[in-house]
Image (cartoon, rainbow, N blue to C red; front, top):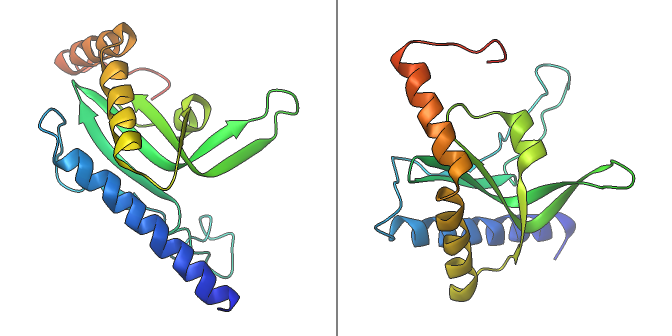
Length: 163
C-alpha cells in the first residue's frame, strides 16, 4: 500500500468511527438532533486566499448535538495547549468535547475544549461513557445559567460588545 492509499484508508476508518458515534446518538431518545450532525473540514481550504493551492481538511471531523439546551461538539481530534511550553497540539483520534450555550466560537472551542480519555476506535463501552459525560455536563449549573442568559438576551434583543 503506498502513502496515498494508506492516507485514504485512515480517512475512511475515521469516517466510519464518526458514523458509529453519530448513529449512536441519533438512536438515543434523550438527545436533541436537528438535521445534519456530522461535519468535516473543507476539501478546498485556502486560509482565506492566502494559500495558492488548496489544502484538504476533510479529515478534521466532528459531530454536533444538543442535550438539555446545551450544544456539544464531539471532536474526533482534541486540542491541547501544553502547560509548560504553551505549544498547541492536536491529539488525533482522542475525543474532545466543547460544550456551549448560545453562539459558537472557534476561539472558545480551542481554549475550552475538554479532552477525554476516550480514543478511537469506539466500542459500546466508550460510547456509553461519552454519553454519560455529555449528560452530566448538560446538568452543570454553568450551562443552565448561560441558557437563561441567552433567553434574556433574545427576549430583549441584547447584544454584547464581544459578539
